[in-house]
Image (cartoon, rainbow, N blue to C red):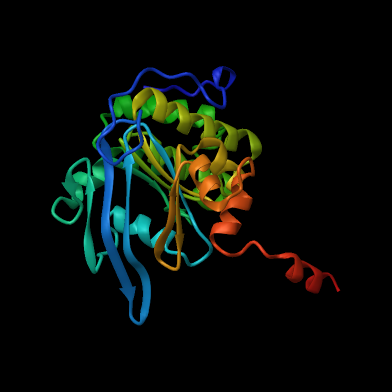
Length: 285
């Protein structure tokens, strides 16, 4: 168990050795937590995903990046079994998400891009409800919820209605709900939206600690590429519903021919969206 302790956190904490990697996954990471094999999905005439394949190992943080409309959210929803795919297969810890929808969901924690909370419950009531759904006993549930409320500076607000919370407070509740049952796989779609700098730092360091010390697998989507570069072990870039590139930041730099450059420049080069000067000049007139 990783406890929230702000004073003891570092951006890249040293970890304990993890199991040897499974074939096709990052060396040094744990066995396969998530395997996405050739999934495709269309919404009417719009082809959202085409033959998307990638994996996430236990103890690994993988960044799922791409321009708006690239298919990141659709991929995450498919991984969780929230939408059916037209082709391909998704397995969580060896379990098919279609054949075992309840079992696979119990292994996951999910923060959607725009969390939909029950706003006429209090924060404490909502978190208690989520903990009950995951089968946490009352004593364990209360201890964990209080720990996270204190760490994210929500203690004292837990008995207020969620409808009166700020966006950042709602995001914290969504994060606590995803974390409190100690999932083996975290699916996070823009999880830092609305968070203050302290809470964002806690979240980033906590994800690193959970991956390193507890072997939690993390699939993490963000448009803030500095964050992805700082915490992700590997990157998967989607463009127009296809995997454009994947690998470590160093490998992507080599592919883009941009050794030593930051992930933003690499991303813009690989996605063909790097020539922004003319746009900026036109908008500045």
